[in-house]
Every structure is written in structure tokens, then in C-alpha cells.
Image (cartoon, rainbow over all chains, first blue to last red; front, side):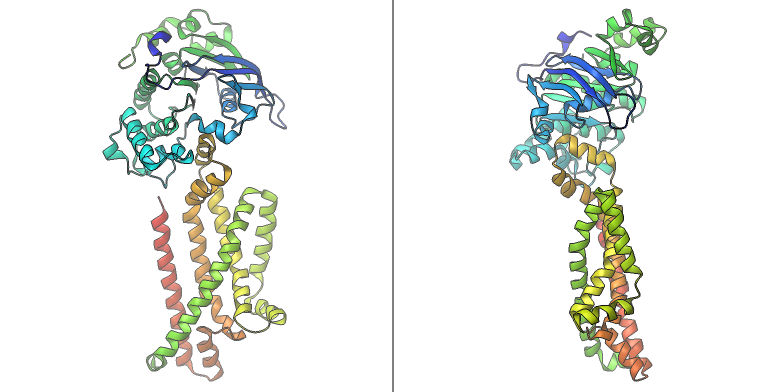
Length: 272
Length: 203
């Protein structure tokens, strides 16, 4: 799993560099901060996975990037520009967002769901139509069959593919994914992981992916960012994480048997 | 049945006036209840106040409310419409609040995260998702207004209640029966129509 295998093709939109500088989040009335002054730089086009147990602050940290959570300290820079100084709505329209519960709009068709951000941005109808077909082909759902379906007629896996297409519609340079595959069964999850790895390779979008599933993190990440109790405990590529866990917490998280985990890395993703 | 057969045109005319009274009241009531319901769903304090006040209004007996309003506004259709609007508020506001509070939080999170403004999220995502429940409130309110509007004849607002009060005054059961039958038929028709609308908007 080398990052060179995932660099953007020349015609792709590419990704943005993200810098979190001293980002802290403290909720009112909470005894402890949800996130303690975190510093983290994610390179353009990188696939970074935030890994940790529930309540460790990984989702909160992710949501500071598109301003769904306002940090109580620190700054978030996308390609050097401070997101806190810009209108939150404008920032969000430039960032893809995928969540575990998918959140497809039930009264819209698949095509309307996928085209919703371009529509908010004022693209003309023909451009939106063309983009919707392009995206449905990217996520391997036949446009002729799926365009006019309502979300309730999709399987869990199909719905999350549409969720990914919707997030990518306006060609964002950053894609945030919050436990996106946690609600589907293991077989569907594996195929969705293959798809997102392929999409990442094709588009070169910077992806920040939150999960509590160690195998998923090891399979997808260029770099794994391990979090515990609101702090980053280790940032390392998967093989290094297995070979040199920073402390007992990481060692316990990745498991007592690093050699078995290593097999996960050796299982190739489709077409990689 | 004889009154209905011999005076079909008069019954139809009063039925028409009844429908207009209900529709006008419903339209005005919705124009007030939708913004009130949105406010109540978003702000807990405002919600408690709005649901409390509309709930109290709903408990006032209809004849008492009409009598009180006549003292202020006089006899006629306007007074009846004000009373019907006031009654419908509780049912309609509750429908809007229940509908909006019942929207899947994932939809709201997705809409915000994708860059909908709060207004776009409300109009394009939350309200459409709440619509089946809101329409349920509209249906119950409409059926209630059809019934309540019969009492409005007592303050010269017209409608099918005219037949009931005339029938009572002249001891003419046939006339009462004609008015009651027409009002019940109207309520059932409205109920069926709005049930269909609810089904149509359910995704």
C-alpha cells in the first residue's frame, strides 16, 4: 500500500492540503474537552483515516473541517486558507460529506440527490444531468436504471454509493467520510471499500475517513491517525503502525498479533 | 329524505357556502400555523408557549367562543372565520411540530454538511420530509372545521348549520336530517381526499 499507487491521474481534479493547527473543541457544560489542541497536516491527495474507539473525538475533529463543529481554539486551513474566516455554507459546498446514515433525501430521485450541490451552486440543468450520469457510472450504478429511483428502492450498499456520488458531485478537492460503511454487512462493506479506494485513485481527492474498524483503516489508509480521549496518539502508514505501535493503547487497538493484521495489507484491493 | 329531494338546490347552495367557510378558514389558519409550528419546533421555549396557548383556546366550548367573539366583532361570517381559525391552530401547529421534530436527523446533518443554508434545508429537505405528518394535521383540522362550521350558522354565517337551526326551530326532523347528512358527507369526502394526498406525498 504505497501512496504512489494512488496519485491522481493528470485529468483529475486532485486534492487539497489540510492543516489543523491547535484545533480544540470543548462543549459547554462538558467536563473534558472533546478534542485537545490537535495538530495534523494531511497532504493533497492523501487518504487519511482517523481511527479510534467511540467517543475519542475523531468525528468531532472531522466535523471541524467543514465547520459542522466550530473549534473553540486553533485554526483549520484548506490549501492555506482559513475556513473559519469564510462563510460556512460556501466552505461546505466545496467539501464532500458522507455519513454513516447516508441521509439521502427521500422525496428526491437518485439523480436529484446526486445533483443537489451543483444545483445549489447554480449549474445549468444540462451540466447537472451530464455530471449525474458521469458520477453514477463512476460508482457503477447504471444511470438508465437508477436515475429516477427513489432512495427507498435502493439497497443499503446502493444507497451509500449514491451518497458518495452526491458528495463528489461538485468536484470537491476534499471528501470527509464519517463511518460511511459501518451500517452495511461485511461483504457489502468490502466492496464499498474497493470502490472508494478506486475512486480515490482515479480522482486524487484528499479523503479523511473516520472509522473504529482497524481492518478498514489498515486497508484504506495512506496514513492512519490513531486517536484516544481527544488526542492523537500516533500518525503512521499502516505497515509502520503494525511494526512500531507508539504505545500500549495502539498495540491493543491493532491487536496482539500484528502478523495476522499484516495479512489485511496483503489482500489486494480490486484493480489496485 | 323528502326535504333533500324537494330542496336539492337550497341544500347544494348551503353546502357550497359551508365549503367556502371551511376553505377560507383553513387557508388563513395554515398561513398562521405553519410559521408558528416552525418556530415552535425550533425553539423549545416558544414551542411550550405556542402549544400551551393554542391548547387552551381549543378547550373553550365552541358556543362560548362564538358568543365572546360576537361581543367584539358582531354577527356574521368574519366572526365565524376567526373562531374556526382559532380552533384549527392547535391541531395544525401540533401537526407541523410533530412533522418537523420527526424528521430523520441524518437528513438535517447531510443537508447542513452539503452546504444547504438553514432556509434551504427547511424548505427543500425538512418541510417536504415532514409533509405527510403535516397533512395528517390538516386532515383532522378540516374534518373538525366541517363539524364546527355548522355552529357558525347560529351567528348568521350561513352554511349547512342553517338547516339544522331552522329544523330545530320549526320542529322539522326532515330538514335536520338533510343538513346532518350533507355535513357528514362533506366531512367524509374531505377525509378521503386528504388521506389520498397524504399517501401521495409519502415517499
